[in-house]
Length: 180
Image: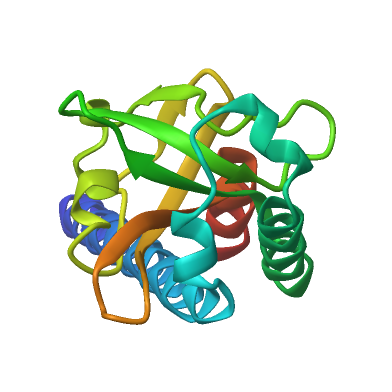
């Protein structure tokens, strides 16, 4: 009798662990899909032609197009309170090296022209083709985040940059803890 109870306990425990892991994975994939949807919707608020006219230089912060871009990025962040970072980048002349154009960060924003090593993040590079999201939490100089991306297009439909949005890794952990 004890043998059968022990076997049943092992089977139930294994089944619960598999179900829990499957639920966590499904929840994480849903979060990635949500980030892609927010990014894809967010780019609709960005004027790609104006974005394209902002030179990759810190002096661009005085331009009306730059201030309008920041207003758009902040509106995206404010409409989605779980987002911690909202920014735009454009590829530079060096493959894998991108330049910031706009950054909604209030305290220490990246400036137009600041370099970023996009080659570390395949999902960011894929953001030139269509909405994408990192397959797992990433760690960079801003912390642990999960990011989503979407291409910014001008009136002719040409890609002129990428919108990046991020939620903090702690938010992902809280979401997963709620499931647990």
